[in-house]
Image 1 (tube, rainbow, N blue to C red):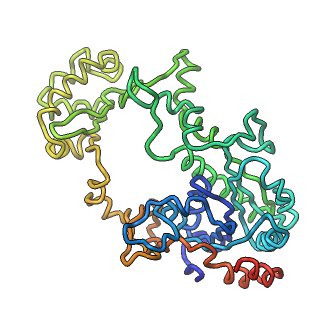
Image 2 (cartoon, rainbow, N blue to C red):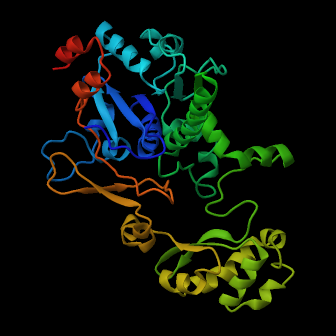
Image 3 (tube, one colour):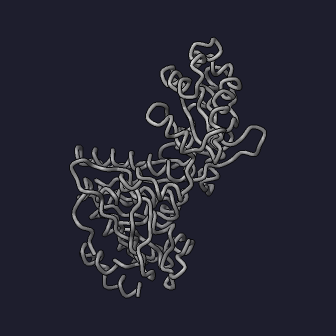
Length: 403
């Protein structure tokens, strides 16, 4: 089952050696853009195949929602890289590829005899991308380079957890796995830049993204706050250290976010809540003043929001002041924006009699039809097909070993 031609990357072949979230998320983005992503899995499969969640009527349990969500549009090939035959097959695949992506711990590929330098011998134009907790010594050393890392590890190290949560409460990680998905997006940017250079200059390259580095880059304001005035930012709930009002505030039936730090938005907010005098009050006439008098400013806003429902607040402020209800996922499934933008997509799921829903790609092109989403692959579903397609000389042995 070769994916149909389409997407700006439909002439790019990606060998995907990734597992869990950071790497698969990066290669998913490439697959959504049309790349032929060949997911290489060990005989036991990617760890997250077994992690669920599973639909109640799924008796097959070939994979759960986690795997489906980040491995769509890919082909699965089983290769045992601990064997000589598996490594030989991979090298032949690499000779036909544009990109290799891996997120093993530092040194794993080298110990397998599949280092970047070895793969580059096989394909001088190859772009090799690595996503690890603490980077690769080829681009910069770290005393933690051999340490394992998860999302929560780098959220803690980067300071993201220190600035997330309520004052005088425990640090909180973000709900989604930003410690994985943000490095994945940086890796996609880097490897696409390297592919462009490889096609222009005939030179491949090694793209290295450290999860810790990526999260520190996302927490950029803490760095300049400390450098410019010695601040050590910490948790302050949903408010902003430099902007006001910029917060989640209570409604009669839940919460809404309101952001009106600019003077124009502030004037419109003051008029809407029946307090036009606040637009010229010396305590609240500009952002600096409002920031210095945050409690007074926010009490005026919340006195109005707490007596109105989320719907009433949004109907009054929508289109005038940046406002939004704090949605549950049930709210999201009912949101006309989400449906109008085709951000929920139904996919087939082996072992389930009806389609299931996952989040669609946010990348859209005005001159192209919507991305066609294919379900995630069964383990080794495309081994025969891919090895035959690329005329792998070790295919006969490899196919026998994987049966």
